Image (cartoon, rainbow, N blue to C red):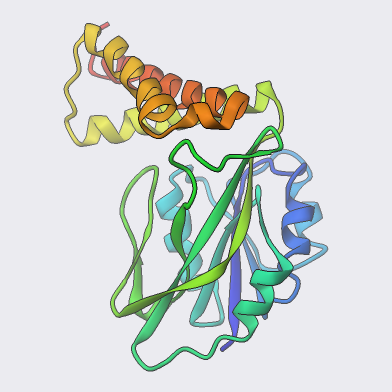
Length: 247
């Protein structure tokens, strides 16, 4: 079972080295880079020569592009702000897929400002990240894309790690990016929203994470992730109104 590890990047010079250090065991590493203007490609070239540039900022398009760039059928997706733990590495290397098993679901452990969030609706956080590309496809979404597998999917025991935000500036940059992508997707899906709804949806998003999903149990981290969900909701709907010419 040979594995191609794929990392999608754009201006990730602060993350990419630590990420790729946890992937050196893979049979190959493939980088899909959205025309980074920092040192991301230079750092990545220390680990692989399979670095491909794209003008696309759509995550699903970049993930789909990686299929043709990988030499192996089995692909492992990892983002630049994520890390494979030694325990998960060992578990993956010991795998011998049974007939009909074409994917594995991995559990992500999310850290916000260095704090592991055990509640807030983000743990457990399971995603298909290891799969056979001959039996898989990428959901055609602008954001929150996923992997669909035609066949059986099993779950691995060990977590991988996600370091979501470095600081407040990084958090606001991500909120701006994700809200823009969500607005574009809502426009494509003909989502309708009123001006009042922009505010009520944002409040609902905060309460859903902080109260319903028990974000308050995560203390400061729970407040910040609730705030992030609220702001993405607020800005994505506001930007949608702008795209629709309503403001």
